[in-house]
Image (cartoon, rainbow, N blue to C red; front, side, top):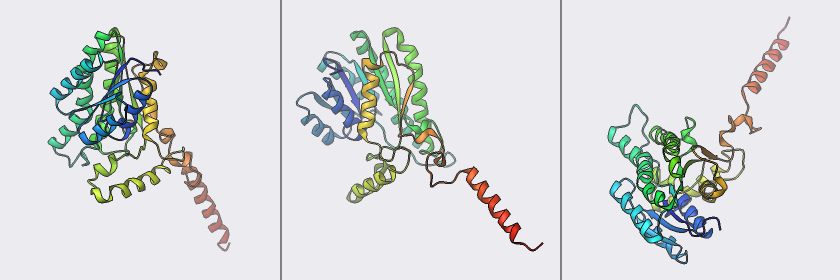
Length: 288
């Protein structure tokens, strides 16, 4: 019960990582304010929590709604001890030579500005409690190319730097700030990002999950619960000496190129050896 008598705010809580995290915080004793634009999903989450979770609709692209969310959480639970800035979506998919300014701004507002404003408006309530912990959802897309669209990746890289800067700014208030970089976690974000019709969304999500099991050294799909466990660790006193950093939870995806861990994928050395062997065999077969 690491969060007994503590108040936690989770954004993007109606599904996926946010839902799993809200449930885990509550199971460990927290009073949780779950925020999302999906009122149906949020109310269903609250209904199964035996009163430990309350839902509050919040569009994190609207600063006034973020401010109101934090004020509500502080009033309902007596303050804010933990903030998990998790709300997000895939954002604009265009390449940098194709994207329009409005699409860029919408993605940044959702994935980066919302995190900054969540911190901004939660911190006064944390100061009143004598400190707290903030966890921000970034991504392995912040660490490498080829993982996600450009705008999403740049926004998530911004979340990492924001987490470091906030950790420095807020240390004097005994507030720790860290980020999580999830790997391939097959939640509904993928089908939603590609505007998949609702009638086939489940089958698409199932296919994505099968593909995810082969995407990294740990031979299973990543689960929302994996990220929830990381969020609870970083928010808890178990991580009391951890701030200004990020935790990669990706099943080993970032350990190196695929051939470094997949014996069925040839690496550069294998390719060169095959080329040399083929050249030698070709030379040996020619008449002298």
